[in-house]
Amino acid sequence: MSPALLFTFVVAYFILLLAVAWRTSKGSDNESFFIGNRNSNWMLVAFGMIGTSLSGVTFVSVPGAVSRESFAYFQITLGYFIGYILIAFVLLPLYYRIQLTSIYNYLQERLGVSAYKTGASFFILSRVLGATARLYLVVNILQVAILSDFHVPFWLTTLIILLMILLYTYEGGVKTIVWTDTLQTTCMLGGMVICVVYILHHLNLNLGGAMEALHTKGYSKIFFTDPNSKLFFLKQILAGMFITVTMTGMDQEMMQKSISVRTLKDSQKNMVVLGFIMLFVIFLFLFLGGLLHLFAAAENLNLTGDNLFPELALHHMPRYISIIFIIALISALFPSSDGAITALTSSFCIDILGIQRNKSLPEAQKKKIRQRVHLVFVFVFLLFVLVYKWISSDSMIGIILKVAAYTYGPLLGLFSFSILTKRQLHGRWVPLICILSPLLCFLLDRYQDTLFGGKFHIGLELLVINGLITFVGLFLASYRADNGQLATDS
Image 1 (spheres, rainbow, N blue to C red):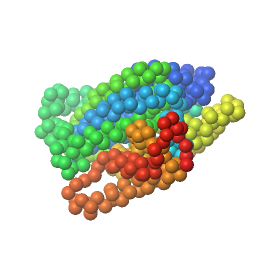
Image 2: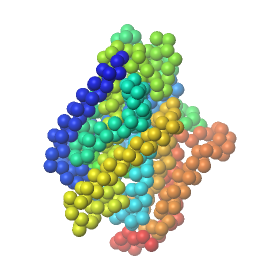
Image 3: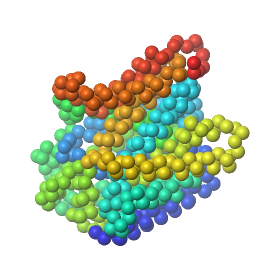
Image 4: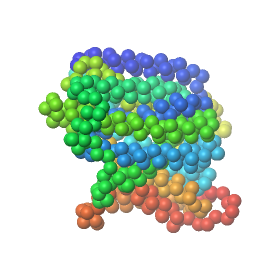
């Protein structure tokens, strides 16, 4: 497949994104950038959030892992669904009651400034690490498939893509992203369906025959019942539930789209519908993964992991499939990166710099600060993508979920403590507790074979353990508040 032809389609797709951004960003201000003027359509938000939730990592890594873990990832997806229900009926009512722009303002109202700043800081760390890992995977594929033939270095490829994202998010923010995510989710899912249909036709299989072939190969197993395995279904469902509650419900990027919907009821519909759609979409990704392995076996190719889908689509399938794959891949890339940069800008401006609370600062000056912060995060992303290039792994989804276990655990502990107790905190201890908890979890994970004799394996439930350690630490650093006493830092 000609790299020049692929590059032409990438440029055409980006021009389309710019046209959508230009149309939707007219008359935008800080309110539009941060929360879309609280006027987003819940159906568009739900559909667009699919692309943000999945990203290029799901598009590539989930199918590639089927040979190792069969359909075990669907266990996590069942946990996702439970998590979306909890977000809809526990967290969203809290956020709407206070009319938040940043969800971490809830921590300030409930637990004080120290908890608020700590929560926002951990979100910034979490989202930078996770979003740049997702970005690295897709940029690396584009580099190998297209830009290396033009002798463009990896760092420049990354910079070009980040500047493309900057161009269409610079003014409109959330107001623009709601629409561009909808377009990109459509392209991503459409591309996946076309690939499934092509492989079924190529292998002369119908849906029933494909499932039988996958079962014969051992690829279609969903539930794993060994309690000592990291794939044990209760561990996976529990981990999936907490991953969603933290990485969606306690994440400014995901929640700023949800709270941009006009009413709580519509926002709840958005979240529940998203949960149902994700069950179907993830299963389709796993089914595609199984088909890709069958295709590779039929062509006598020894491929697996993150290289499976790109290698087959770009070098062993017809030209139109290569084009569809590239468009679907960048459609998976942009929603997870544009939303992350926008949310990080929002959180840093609101939670760390406090520009929304500064009533004496003119709106024009606030906008300048926001734009400068936006630029800074673009270059932070560039730096971290280059770091991931240096430590590249065979499966980025494993890295992303492990990073989430360490960095979202303190957020889980903070929000759980604020919701489940009525106690207040001695604020000076909060940052220390939230730093020590991931460090203890790192040691637990590193030496688990020694501690458990190799019989029990901690997997994604490390996130829950991290949150529990944080919760216990916060409880020890808390005191019983008088009725009606406001959160203070003492």
